[in-house]
Figure 1 (tube, rainbow, N blue to C red):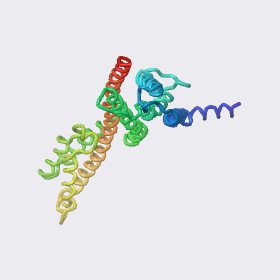
Figure 2 (figure 1 turned 90 degrees about the vertical axis):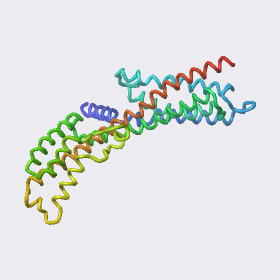
Figure 3 (figure 1 turned 45 degrees about the vertical axis):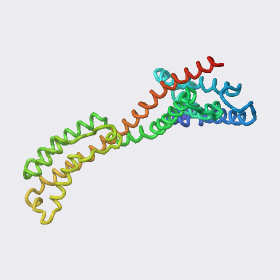
Length: 295
């Protein structure tokens, strides 16, 4: 009995650690591929007059399926607020959201019959593709970035990393005090003028141009490694200590900037995905109403 319970527990633990992309052995991927295959086969077997378009019975069928899918896919945000397990767990819902959402590229394209123009129908299709593409970036980010963020943080929070930077600044100020004025000024600049982040592109790159800490570190290292090493002879341990603390601060700054970069990437796609979804729903409504109005 104990062995059976152990096996059940192991199976449950494996399911809990399973990626939403691999949920139940790619069950929703298989469903999505099956739907796409049926749609494609039907497209080539059916010969409407004069040609395939959204106004044939086949086009209306795919259009209805696509519209219902789009509405259902938008419910993920509401579903996230309910915590349940089992068949309709959040992981399962997310897996279905991903794969059935990708299947719309086939369903909606076949629905159009490849008939595009400057109209509300093509606008709805274009917005749908924008939502799907931005969602694909979201899949990649959420499949890779959380793990990278965890490894980068090394079991510390962003607030704790900032606190450590402040602590290093205090140590740096004490270590640099015996140095000559020009080096004290460089170190003071590293304390007072260091930018953790900046605008959007700076946050996304994770790099800050003309970083005061990097400049101070380079200046002190050049002095320590210069010809004659006069600074080493004169300041010895004080110089080595200042360089060591600057180096640690530089490493910590890079960790904080990478952390902010990862967070920004996770947020950026939502700033595109969510508004595009709202516009898609509006365009889809206009598309459906115009179809019924002119039917």
